[in-house]
Image (cartoon, rainbow, N blue to C red; front, side, top):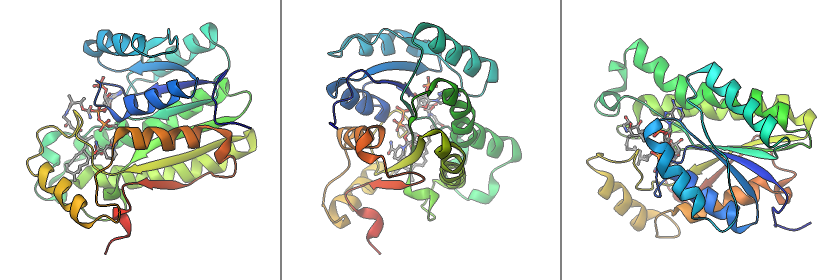
Length: 257
Ligand code: NDP
Ligand code: KAL
């Protein structure tokens, strides 16, 4: 067994730009020799995702639309993959969304529509894409999602996204329970804060990063490369005994009281 992923194909969902954690995962997969299929939501990102895909060492020809709020989109996306590629060996789900107004103040002000939107995109989507991906994972494999510490404890401003991440983490366990018999593992990475497009406009992001530099056991912030390399481990057979797990790639911050 080797950590080479040559001959293996993975779907990476959620590259918006070069700062995206999904892009860190894609770079690590590319280094390991894997073939990557990219999916994006907004049309405005198609060109940039294709350019990024073309900038990698390996040849990654497939860049497909997939808005995870739309069942037809998900079905069409995975049918296209089935037709054009066939078997896949795993998937990295790097997608979350909540309305900006809900990422400040009190959680209890979240209205029903915004609560459902955050849960739809950030949690249910993992179940929806896993159902379609399973059909193409004929040799077994590994599904991965991204979560944050705010799903385990209250963190200021994370609010409805924390509740959605708790739901996502529970989904990881139930999906692991369902898919284990098909040789498919399901895990999450709980990443430390990383300055991405999603994190843009968050007033006190600098102070969050500073606190981690001061208090985390490793005294440094998390990089997309660190998340990418743990993703390669979870997507490879080296982690063949691991499922339903949440691995913190956060310089150890979550153990600090
Ligand atoms: P990015 O902004 O780079 O990525 C977020 C992605 O979510 C975008 O590519 C966006 O695509 C996608 N997305 C939103 N709505 C939809 C939709 N309806 N259908 C499909 N895709 C959609 O941010 P990150 O890399 O930071 O986020 C990736 C994941 O990492 C998220 O789950 C986030 O919660 C998690 N995470 C991030 C941390 C951080 O500090 N940055 C820490 C811990 C976890 P588009 O723009 O095309 O709509
Ligand atoms: C405690 C932290 C501080 C910030 C609070 C909330 C962060 C929530 C993340 C969530 C995914 C952000 C959004 O949904 C942003 C969205 O409302 C506006 N942005 C966009 O629409 C852009 C253009 C697109 C690309 O973004 C998305 N998501 O589609 C949490 C920090 C310290 C750690 C983070 C950022 C965690 C996380 O989950 O991302």
